[in-house]
Structure formats: C-alpha cells, structure tokens
Length: 296
Ligand code: NAI
Image (tube, rainbow, N blue to C red; front, side, top):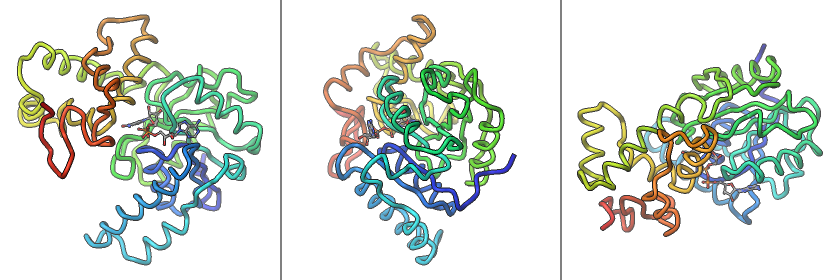
C-alpha cells in the first residue's frame, strides 16, 4: 500500500501545540494543508508561530528561504470546517474529550468524500470508541504524533476493532513518507508510549507530593542518572497539564480504576489554577520573562 499522493490535501483540525506541528510536517512533505480551529484567529496565530520557527531554521541553515516560502505557501487557514472537505486525510488534534471529538468527526463525515481517511491524534482514547457511531468507522485510524511533532520521529498508527487494514497501511506509509518512524499499535488505552509513560509521571508526582525532593532535583536525576531526555516535571510542563491530566484520567477510567494509572491531585491543582505549563507561562516551573525556575 502506497503513501497518500502529494497532490492530496491534508486537513488538520485543532491548531494548538500538536495541530500546528502536524500541519507543518505535512506542509514540509509537500501537501497542501488546511488548518482549522474553532477558536477565532487560532489557526492564523499557529501558522505565524510555524513561520517564526521555520525562519529560525533558515538562520541555522537547516532550510533555505525558498524552501520555507514553499512550505508556508502550502499552509492555509480553513475559516470553516467545510473548507477541509477536499482532503484525502484529516488529522484531528483537538481537546482530549470523546464527545467533542466524535461531534467533529460526524460533521466531517457529512462533508468529506467517502475515500477520505479520518485520523485522530488522540493520546489515549480508544480508536474503536471514537469511531463508534460513524457511518464508516472502517476508515478511522489513530495517527499519534509526539510533541513537538516536527522534531519527534515516532508516530503510532493505531487500529480500532474495525479499522480497515489498507487504511492503517496508507496512514503508516504516509507517516513514513513524511519522514517519521511509524509503528503499528492496537487500540488499547494509552496505546504503547502513553501507557508506559503513565507510571513514570505518576511516581514522579508522588515523590514531589511526599516532598522527597524538589522538581528540579528530580528532573535532573532522571536526566543524568536515568538517561532520559527530560524529567517528568519539565516534560509535563511541555505537554501541558490540561492535556496530560486528561490523558491520565482517560487511561485510568479505561483500566477500570487501576491504581497504577491514578491521576494526581497535585496535577489537578495545577489545571484548576490555570498553571498549564509552558503554554501559560507557568507550571511546575516558571517561564515568565525568560526565567526557567521552579514555581514557589
Ligand atoms: P491544545 O490545547 O494545545 O490545542 C487544542 C486546540 O484544539 C485548541 O487550539 C482548541 O481551540 C482546538 N479545539 C478544541 N475543540 C475544537 C473543535 N471542536 N473544533 C476545532 N478546534 C477545536 O492541545 P494539544 O496539546 O495540541 O493536544 C491536542 C490533541 O493531541 C489531544 O487529543 C492530545 O491528547 C493529543 N496529543 C497531545 C500531545 C502533547 O504533548 N500536547 C502529544 C500527542 C498527542
């Protein structure tokens, strides 16, 4: 099974951290990309951010100015969901909530062609469950990128119970053609990486709650002694606590309350306070005025 043809339009729904990155990846691969977000102006802001990042890469000689111009010309704001109707593949990267995602997919099903592949970037929600209620659930697949999408190679291609094999294969080959390292996974809660990662976050949060050491010490230890690229506190600040907490709740519920996946009250407090991490300027650390220091 071949990758999607470059002439196929890619629709990306949600222009947050992940949607913007996925749109950039597809545009870099030569597709025309329509980026839609239901928050007014969000898609345009996301494209401006992509532009800034690409310009930095020109300064570092990773891209030429001409290449960046071509990538940016591939990226367009979709003012309405209807503008993604021509897409051959739609990748959804909106809030981690079953009902909201299902609503978007039923709207998409009404406007897109029957051949269009519907993919969700969900971190944890069952692909089988998300596709339930669709007229054609067999063309629904998980296409799970990692943050930041333009840099991280791994993409989990997740099949639900009724996902057609050729749909998963085309998604896999497309991710590979986009320069990614795809892996097939069956649709279990958290798939592969997010399932393994849950106890990593949970145990780190428990250490912090028990005041064993502060975030900076725990992160440094995990990095230096454990060989991880980031500790749990800096990583969840990057992911966003709203997103990370929602994923933990979803995995916990899906495993019928298995203690290993229990969400942390400490993280819930951060979400309630709006301390969502880098994107709001503070989480476990403060990112205000260029400072990266633990929050008091
Ligand atoms: P985010 O909060 O940065 O962005 C979500 C965007 O979706 C927002 O701009 C919001 O306005 C938009 N949105 C919400 N509802 C919408 C709707 N009905 N229609 C159109 N747009 C809508 O979230 P982020 O971090 O980009 O995550 C998005 C998805 O990707 C989630 O399912 C998350 O679990 C998954 N994911 C997140 C990763 C991360 O590290 N942040 C990594 C891999 C997957």
